[in-house]
Image (tube, rainbow, N blue to C red; front, side):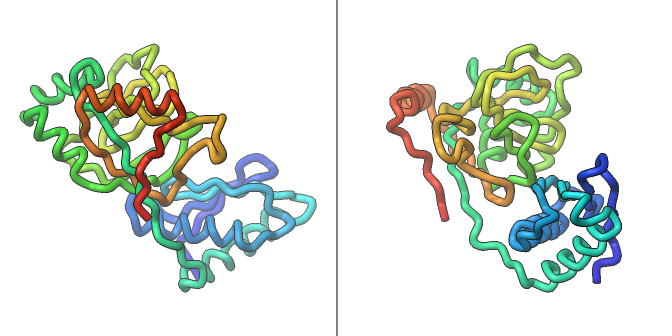
Length: 242
């Protein structure tokens, strides 16, 4: 029976389950396991579940289960999922082509100077590993990615920009992510991808979900425009590794 779970009421129809305090894969594995267990249970009290870095927010019907009953129910699910009874299937990797620098990455030059790394070193480090999608937020299709190399960690802008282009690839502290649509934002922008991380005309509108992974592939300016043209014509399918 898990003894380190914490439960917090989120209004009168939701409970926040905290499974740890550190943003790491072990904690997120537990988050993903409980999230899947909640969905699999198909319990009449459950409305929706939302996984994050270290928590799962569960919306429920209080007329079916009380808060205390939900705590008992979720503790039991967490215990069963921790025992390995709800294993996750193979993780998908979405390959995201990115043109780094030039007018696509206005903050890359400052990072070169402050970090003492060349432009190519930053690109190689950033694109040299796969990133787990820990959670989806604050815009539809915005991926919060974990596992970035600490050598290229860089603080947010003190004054956020009023407009960040769709497809912008940014760094904020020890995180990296992709803006799926035009938005204000304070992340340091180092490149741009021509593919769409959110397209309401498609089903599903977002090609990835929490638990999947992102792999950045550096491309040239010419490749960026070629892919962008194909995307606009609906003729580009992103590479997905199963």
